[in-house]
Amino acid sequence: MSFYYSVASGSSGNCAVWQAGNTSVLIDLGVSVRALGKALHEIDMEIEDLSAVLLTHEHTDHIKGLATFTKKYDLPVYATFGTAAAILQKLPQAEKNLRTFAGGEQFEIDGLHVRSMPIPHDAAEPVAYRIDGGGHQLGYVTDVGFLPDSIRSTISGCDTVVLESNHDVDMLRTGPYPMYLKQRIRGKYGHLSNEDCARSAAALAQAGAKRLVLAHLSDKNNNPLTALRCTQRVLDGTDCELYVAPRGAMEQPLMLAAGKEAQCSLFD
Image (cartoon, rainbow, N blue to C red; front, side):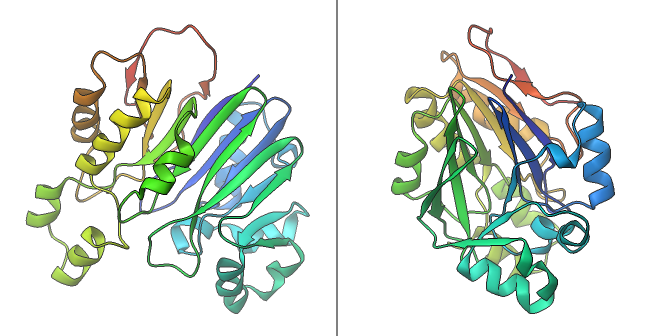
């Protein structure tokens, strides 16, 4: 059994489970350990069932639960050298769990092949991931100011892609954020807009993506229906299923099975 399960997605917290074959990994830990345990319990899993944690970068909405996690569990936490250094400045006790690597490096976790990809974001050494194993391929790309051709090429051919659709350009422009924050979000090291996400989604669907999950939506500068409609327009005529990850946990995992009819869901 293989699946993708979003525990949290957005500026208040990011965390997801990817199971391929017999191996399950957690991507980011931007929720409390209690919330993680509760979410996993809903899908008949325990934290101890995880093989590892993969961190994309050190921003709080991606490592919120790390302090408690590293106190209670012996599981390895993979992070780039830059991300690990930033974490250790605040959480020196995490050193025993950390497994460090350079951005762009590839490694194995219990039969899964993990390829990290440096990304343009205002963090120490942030990365996206491609994970192959169990007959499936996941591309996981959030917190990017833009999507370089090199990353799009690396995740092309993945049957499942999680891609940031952070903000609507007009909502951001007219929204409540101060100007410096608006400039950060729409800058080269900020976050991906709905329109940029849609352009990449079309290319990924043509390259074989069967499931696309829109992630890391802004609470103030976006909404699920707006993001969904923007990308759905470019996917019409393809067999790529489209989903929007909610701010809280999905009601059920996204099961990875061939032959399903194309879907479009908000996971309400």
